[in-house]
Length: 343
Image 1 (tube, helix red, strand yellow):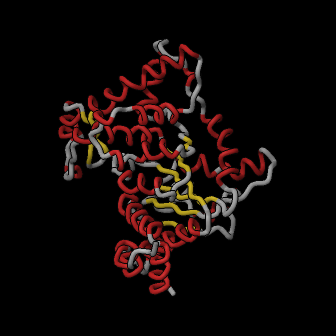
Image 2: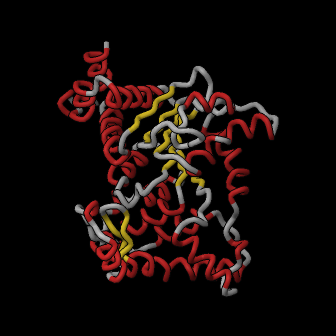
Image 3: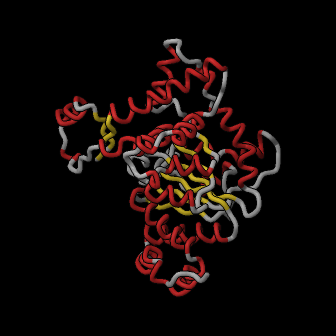
């Protein structure tokens, strides 16, 4: 079987032809380094902050997971549940393209419509939150009765895989949570308490209907991640691809110095680092910190390929993933195209 012709690589060719300087160049270079790492047998770990699931990142992230371009994830509790919301309630979302001109009264009307606005779109209270609640709360109650304990994402893995197809409103091929569950990807969800279902869970704990102990803690996530990182970093190593900042990124990247200094065990450094963020460099900001600052924390080394793209991840990441999927489908043609433009 031969590679497809170069005409089947439109996104990669577009990036190589047009992305020459500034954030465009950083995007191109990060993309090529990502592909070289994967092509060399390496793996990639993603950290996803922000509202990427509500912004439908799954359109390209789910195929990337299935294609073997993503090997582990750290996500906020919000991104975890919102991938599921998009699957079961997609048609009930309302978009607000003119949100910049809203008044407080406009947002109050949205509230009264039982919609929860996220920039220019909104999550429907009844079709998303309440629809999922009727499935997950009984799971929590059964776990309380049986004394079972799970990681937060494991409840959602079971739920998304058990939902009948008749409950789908979104395209299941574009649900990254479903793709990750089917691939059994390792996931950490640090700070999951800070999410809608984290709040719902807390309310059931307060009412005595569920035991807090059924959800394993963030400390247990890290303890498990020690072993997962060692496995993922075997061979050609694992890179770190970060969208946004905050705990979704800072929690997993700390595994390297923690193994080295706290467990006093040998560990491979991260083999690649890229952050897509619209946070400008600022005083004391983790989201705005340059990658070389992480060298001082022993998270990265001077040899780690490092990239920062200061742009909107909803624009940059689908472009990168589309190009990477093209490379995965036709690696030989991709190599020729890169040689033609880069040399």
